Image (cartoon, rainbow over all chains, first blue to last red; front, side, top):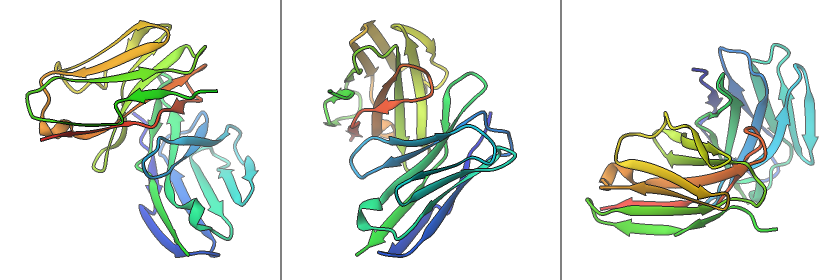
Length: 110
Length: 112
């Protein structure tokens, strides 16, 4: 079973700072998804990356897929309090099910 | 468009009682998933359906848990009897494919 490790587990920063969170696996990802979950809500899909080396941007968020497709990163520029939440990475298992990492809890203080 | 609808949003019950969680997927979605989220174990897939048929229930913790999907617009997750360790947030998600899933707001269950 593919396991996804996310780091750091918790991150507390000031508004305006930059940050990067990571998602790693010992296995190759077929594709990888990033979700954000706000307090009291369900996860919401942010992006899907498929090709090794792929970079996708969503406003101040930059998602990168490693060349070997075994790791991914999410970089947030000039974080805002609205970015606060749990960031989850997920990948499809051999059976097609989505496997989620434990997540990175981000707190952005005004 | 309405997203995935779950009810109730909050449930507090006593150990030994039956709990039924409900989900209405997005219209037209062929896949429906039930997840459980806890601080210790994160987000875990319990069971998923394709075209109302259970495909994989290997994540269902034990026989106390059961799920049904009698039609394309409704699913239930039942816990009988409930135990304190079942306390968690239960999410329902639906999708057109197995990969891009849309989550409901969750049901927060507390078993005393």
